[in-house]
Length: 431
Ligand code: ATP
Image (cartoon, rainbow, N blue to C red; front, side, top):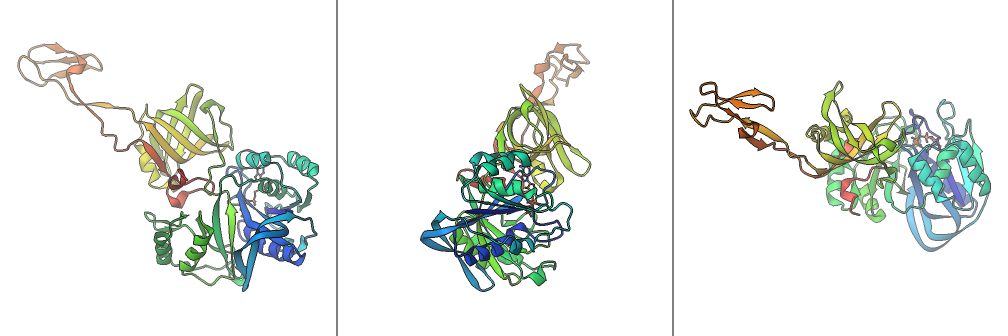
């Protein structure tokens, strides 16, 4: 059976991922095994009511067989999972989970879904790319005979169901470490130098440290149970990476299989067909020159035959804005990013420059063929005249050079400090 939980935390505390520990405890208490890595599934990053990263967790339980492997530790105990297993339905105490729900927060609406069978994959794709209604999800859950537990309006059922439906066609891993309860609301310490050393020594981890902005990306901003999280492609290497990081003591760690860094949220669209709350990949030609607006955000527009849309590199994307500022009208590019309703703008995650327009700039007026004096312009597009001899020449007699574009075709992305969970880093694009 698949057990999924979502929407349990608030901005001021807790983290839904922590519930993996009481959940595993309950699974073991009921005599079942954990099958596969627990999953952390990120859903539509543009939905307005998410707390932070719009993530739900899923643990599969049943009678395990095949290879057994370590997935974490909690309060001195090792946690193990089986590679394969037979799904079995059992009673799980929801109460042991619900004591962690932040029900007093008005925006927290926990949902738990237990399903013997995997839910249809389309539910995942809709959940990661569009907006799902509770009604639609509940109909599917009903058809699949899933059990649901709603707290308050129970909106978490949506994310929990979409998470069960994830088939992990593309995936990465994240190892998360957790502080003991008395430290959840306190400042915590993760040693910057050790994170840099880990980043340099490991091959398959990514987004650990932002060198330019001197930012330790593995440490969350919020004061939650999570001390740090390391992302990567190889779970064995993540365990070694964790031991290279110097930090406060933690009481548990777990490896999740996740859809982070997969670009699963991205849909290919023509510009005129973009709808709010989607994350899109659009090909177009720059139709409005980039300009810097108040707050340091850089805005420009692209078009194709179906329409025009505004794109933005917001201030938090730091040096990425310098690339955007170098774009000019006529450049052919591909943009990736999320779209909100208001403003209806592509919030850029990365771009690919396909072709830079060759831009001719005049460097010198022509010289008079008779007297050798520099000629004067008669007016835009009208050519030049020599003041002394009165001779006229055409516009193309001036000396032109191609503008040094300072950028070249290829991929450019926001720095690690501004990376979104689902966005695939360029270094993984070929993987
Ligand atoms: P955390 O990651 O810390 O758990 P969060 O950022 O995931 O917090 P939630 O508190 O889970 O935010 O809020 C997201 C809410 O949106 C959940 O109730 C979830 O069920 C719901 N939700 C997720 N994806 C969709 C979707 N595509 N359409 C409609 N509702 C969604």
